[in-house]
Length: 241
Image 1 (cartoon, rainbow, N blue to C red):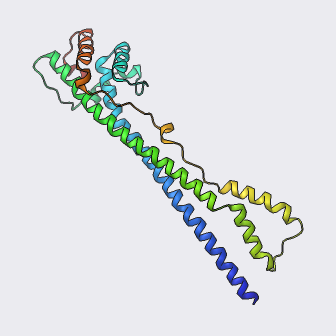
Image 2: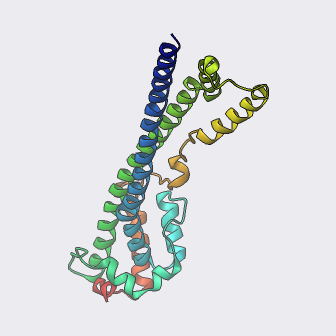
Image 3: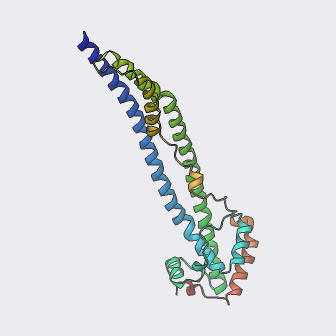
């Protein structure tokens, strides 16, 4: 009879452990995947937003005009804006290598290059914004999964139940166990607690949707003309040298 009770106790313990660690592993896998998605979103931010932003900064050249560009487009944060980027010929050469250039005059080539990059930036910002929105929801879902997991898997109650299963075994608890066990359970529960992932909006910058060219064409044209004149009407190819 004792052997049967011992076997049943082991089977119950195994079932509890399998269920607990099975669900826990699913959440940990989701969290690792979420962190990977955050890293991929940052690469997307660099490739589809950052590089084109820097290209526009370089074309505008002066920080005062860059801030005019911010006011025009609704950009709030000076993301990727570094004065060194505006002056480095090496970075300029690398960023403009392979950029399509078209137009009959210097002014038209400068204008078209700016507009082509701006249109591409609008697409990149929209795609990145969709990614960020998806990651915000993904992070919230994992946080909810963790909260539900802890509600359904109270380690203190589980440990107490397992001790009661063992109460008839040869390893009887001593008189001091009643005082020590809750402290031990609390420590174990703290060590085993799953932490909610950092919110995507705290890890990644948000960008407002940029206005399409047709809604701000005249203002953009004035800004481009001012940048072109201030730089001595440069040939676009100079940005590659």
